[in-house]
Image (cartoon, each protein chain N blue to C red):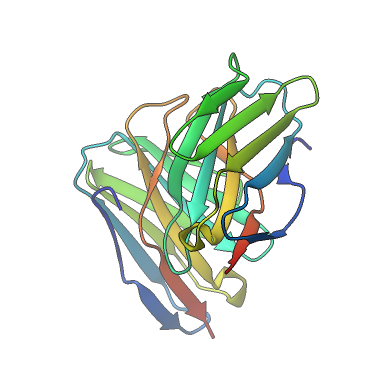
Length: 111
Length: 113
């Protein structure tokens, strides 16, 4: 079936380096994608979103890239900080009010 | 957590007992959702509501029922809890449909022994 998934379950990154978290999706009808951050013991927190008619969107220290040709989504975090350690989820909206989530990537920042 | 509370935050119950989890929001958002989160599965939608008394099933609805009698409250009931329902349950809200981000509550950790 169609689903959202992340390429790697874990990512270890040196403090100060840039992080890239990847997500593959298979539903070409999805029109909206979101990245969430979940810290230990908390609910997911919205980071940034992108619509299918865009290929790039920037926020504060984060950039989301969307490649519809290969159905790939990525989240780039600039100058990764210890507070960025968390699980990151991508989610897709297929045109209704439901989201489909990937399994998540755990990011660990090394000091 | 965007004006969303969940109660209880932790619960241990025995197999076969009924359990009700409550989600309360102060944002007056129309849409409310219940998810469960298990290792390796991310978040999976159980049920959702698109208005008072308007609810529908998600992808893992078996064994769960919901009710929404007021805009601010969305209840999730496990009629007869099973060990497979041990999980962390999250409530979420959104203001509009079709493209709006969802805001999540702090979660309820449920253990069924």
